[in-house]
Length: 384
Image (cartoon, rainbow, N blue to C red; front, side, top):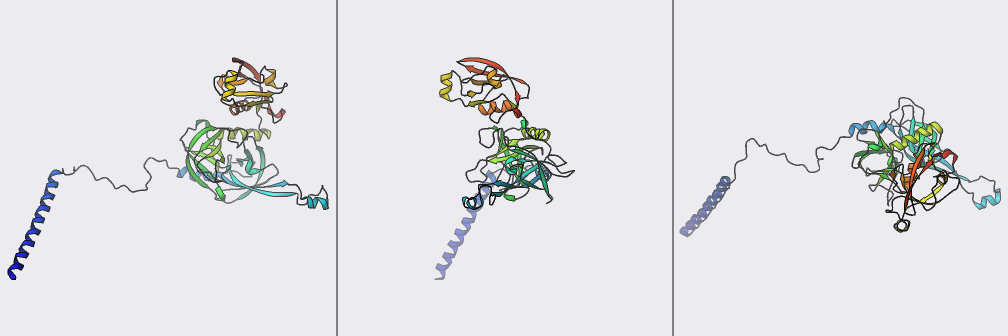
């Protein structure tokens, strides 16, 4: 019995020793096969998931200075509504009982001068009869005077009493490039001084149905209800645009926002201060339409670019210059015309009293006419 136990113990110890020998041998073989690490090569730092990659810009300083120039705007507009027939029956048609209602609008604004000029959207203000209050970054609330409203571009200009107010300096929106970093600053859902970061997704966006004059900057910086009238700021801390609208199927942010370029907003502001309205060039009433593929084929036009003249008035500058219904406008001062919206903007931006060259295709032939530009203040709203 003792002999059997002794034999078993010897076998177990032998197997254990053989295992150690094999394990030690494998370890020594691996050490011999793998070269030792170079002494001059430091160990690579461990990568931590979630850290921002190096090279991203730091906007903290720009944001800290910019938010002070962005305001909260509340507007109360009194609108007349048709009185209930029941009350008209008892009090007569002249009764104003329950004939008006108060409509409140909330949005954002941008202080653009130390003495208190504030830019915002026309749809935030409502109309010239609205009672507008501007809340500053330091929680002060000031009554604002409406200097002017331009529904064509959806821009309004306000004036508050103050001096040495924080402002955003003007940027040149023509220098914006696609994929350039921008900040959107405003008061979405009444959350004041909210900053979001994105890029310029596109420039020159038109045919959106937001305004009559459309030349929008598109951005993916988060813009939500309440951001209207706020600032789009470039990476140099300059005002690049006035946030105006969003494309959304839910009513909230979906990565597509639009801003009025700063150059256009500045021009509108200058006219509102000087004239109380925006004065634009016009060539009289002319109705234009997009060129379809079928229309281009029938009219002998090589592409669908341009603007088709559907009709015009005989007393308009454009008719008297020689253009006719059926012409396709293809150039303006020697540059191609993309579509009707593009042509309308070119006319509106033309200096009053100047003469422009409009190229058309008529019956397959190219013609060019010199057309005088009049002032929009003497024309009806249907004038181009």
